[in-house]
Length: 505
Image (cartoon, rainbow, N blue to C red; front, side, top):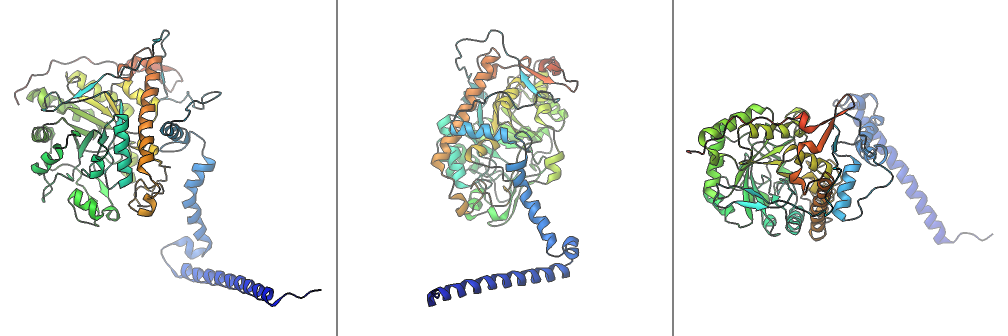
């Protein structure tokens, strides 16, 4: 029998040595971990079950990913299930969005919405997006025929390539892009789309050293032709009563310069605008922004009680309709954010299903419905939810997380950690590398366009020309008895109190 060569013996010896070394290193690691776990005092489990307890934390971390990909059914996940995300992905890629055999949606639970098809729908199926005009009392009113626009996502909370893709995609689709409260970056402007500049409680991008308004900066932002409107943010869905939170790891030199804040430190906005302690102060702020910029100015808020809206309307009637905000963006209690306390995400504010019809009815009651446009925001990413909002009385629907899915978001729930695997909410260049603005901008545009297309399909099936012609009688809501009721009956139209004053403000 031939003997192994010297070279073969050497390789076998190396492999054996490597194997023994690996086993020894593994055993040494286990001993070190055992000693560390047994002597530490932070974790009871690790102290009582050294080494073994560490697997609990590993499985707990991996559990959310296993549930998402292997165990959760198509309509089980939160905040968005696989069926909802899947429609957005298909719409963004402009692939076939039809499904076969039958719906997987359970139509029996209370709160389920379905639409009332017309017995004699229009044969033409023409799209009829009616123009919407904001700011009749501003020097530069703004009109758009878009029906689904991009809600506020701050540069800082999202990355450079994400902003670039959104800006270019919004231009291609003819929709507006809300800047979020992080200021106006060059990346918002480079796509050439219509912009809504959001002013949060930190007033980033238009603040003076004391944190108040710098009117010169306001005018500088307004000087950009593509900045069409201003939105004063009181609160957002996931954290009403608390200002924006940008972790210091995301406050790069560029972001610090755009926002006007120190580099590398957490950017925590006040929980409200110090200038507005009541509705009178709020209307003064809105009037100041509108007068300084010459452009339509509205507000964004989560509705906690109808009393705020009633008081606001009463003050407007006292001052005159020209003092009113040009629009109100109503965010839902289940709206999104990059970072917020769970106590606010889970428990604070009114869901849009209740607050949107309520807000519309309050404006009708005080004769201000035509003066103040209503934008609906918060977890509206599929045609059925958007169509419901139009039935409830919205003039415009905006979404942030829907467009994040269009960018490639996989709901990894790491928005607050600077470790987003899709490059959307991170400033790590290695992770941003995978997000190509050129290709993703096309998906952003296709998502908006396919949303508009399917909204038209729903509207035509209901017998009207477009989504803005949808009314409450076109939707039915399932009750806990199992029967459904017309939304018009569930939220009956209120009677106006009196015609509003023409104004003396």
